[in-house]
Image (cartoon, rainbow, N blue to C red; front, side):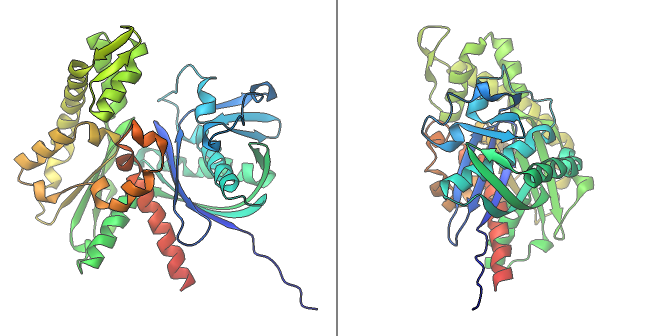
Amino acid sequence: MTQTTVASPTIHIAGDIGASASKFFYRTRPGQAVPIWMDSAVANSLNESALPSLNAGGRPQDSTWLKIDSEIVLVGESAKAFLDSTSLTANKAEKAAYKIAAALGIAAELEHLPSQYKAFIWLPLPLTEIRTREQIAHKFNAICEQGFICRGKQQQVQPILKFFPEGFGLYLNRKKQLDSAKHAITQRRTLILMMGHRNLSILCFEGGSLRASRSNSDGPGFWPAFEKATRSAGVPPTDYSPLMLALTTGKPQQISQAQAGLADFGPYTNFVRQTYWQAVSIYLQDNLLSQLTDSSVDIILSGGGSGVIRSQLNEYFSSLGLSDRLIFADKMQPQLTDLVGQLPEVTHNPSIPLRMSDCYGLFQGLIGKLTKVAA
């Protein structure tokens, strides 16, 4: 009698474990592309007393918990109640392994996978954190080796984890676009500006490679500018959330807890944009202008911060005669907007396509590689 073996199911997943949110795309079968959006919070070293209120229904990413040995770790929305604030100074490596494990557990639950499966994982890291990849991999692989529980279900993962510099997903997507137009990306300079929560990165790709000497990740982040502006304007912390909504949705009328009613946040949104743009423009002058002399340069803008000051960025590059070389990442991938439209977070945060564009490009690269191997 011939004995047949059933291959383990496989998750292909690309993630961006950012400071403001964790973003993932995964697939378990051909043609699938599922987005996951999670809060960035992680609360670890807890005991089982933290669990009774969880698994109460809704999306698994809204009530995610892990059990590793006897340690309980809350990830995402479920962690926020146990944290006074999310630290921006803590290195991502400290929490990254938990976020990856949580994303896999969520995908496995959504797709009704058995406890044992393989996982191919691609992750981008800022240049300043690339050195932490071995630390992240060591922690994550150790979790997988011993096995862990996600939301009550055992997970036995065989992982293959690979890291890339942030922005690489956007580069892959631009390369695909140019290839279809019979243009070689190796014959042009591609500058990718990642305007994130914690920092601004400038990535320079030339000749098909990242030029580290012309790239950096130490630019001003959106959140420090937001905090500076709100403190200066006297906005109380209880109104940070409606002010952020006013910024991201473009609707200045929001309910204010401090004013116990509807309030006009328009003047504050203008001040935040002004403060952020002032910091960004100085940084661009010092770190970007000298790289714009190449006539074949492409400038790709991504990250939530770029959406907040989109008009200022358009004016800036237009004044340099480069408006036709400027590409906002959410306009590069129209299918991305449709894909993430299923996320309820998009309702109050229309910048999500911008914030997930690098992750989606990396996911497409992972799937493209898979397709080539299969062929």
